[in-house]
Structures are given as C-alpha cells and as structure tokens.
Length: 52
Image 1 (tube, rainbow, N blue to C red):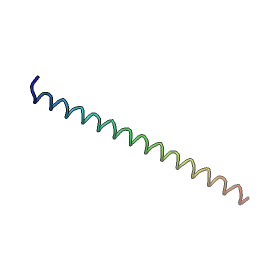
Image 2: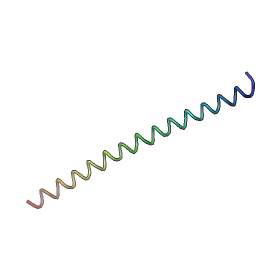
Image 3: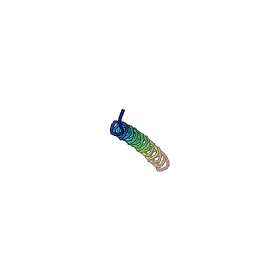
Image 4: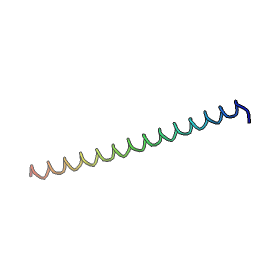
C-alpha cells in the first residue's frame, strides 16, 4: 500500500464521518421540530380550554 492509497482511504473515512454527522444533525433537527409542534399544539389546546 503506497502513500496515495493511504491518503485516499483517509479522505474516504473523513467523507463517511461527515456524512454520518450530517445525518445525525438532520435527525436531531427533525426531532426538535416534532417536539416544537407538539408543544405548540399543547399550548393552543390549553388556551382554548381556558377561553371556554
């Protein structure tokens, strides 16, 4: 294995790590959006009950 093979392998590993981190951030953002929507719906529900 020569140096070019080693560098190419390291670059590919870095790409895979970056892709995994991007997926993780996207999953966290989606979970946050779901949580915010649920909190907002609960708040509106509470406000509607108080107004009756």
